[in-house]
Length: 90
Image (cartoon, rainbow, N blue to C red; front, side):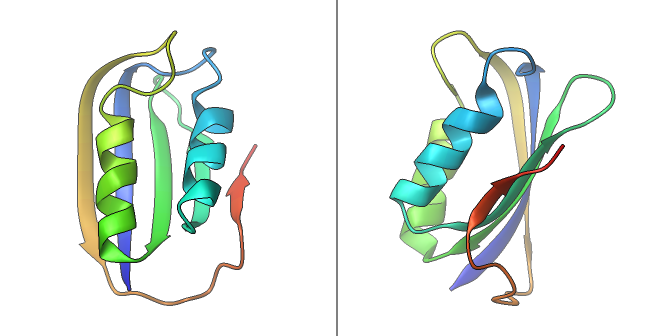
């Protein structure tokens, strides 16, 4: 199991990126959260099996149809197992 801290930049707010990411994460058994950040980026913390995290990171590189992703940054962090679901934070 792994944990990743992710930042997605581009046209990723106002295009349902967070809701789509929640569905994608849940379908892959990934827990954590996603939220909008000041400045227009989206931030997420993801926990789950390594292959599933890699698949979700691949999805983040394009996002939902109306998104235009410019950059995805990710950093591995120590796995905690603290999340039971994947939430959209407001």
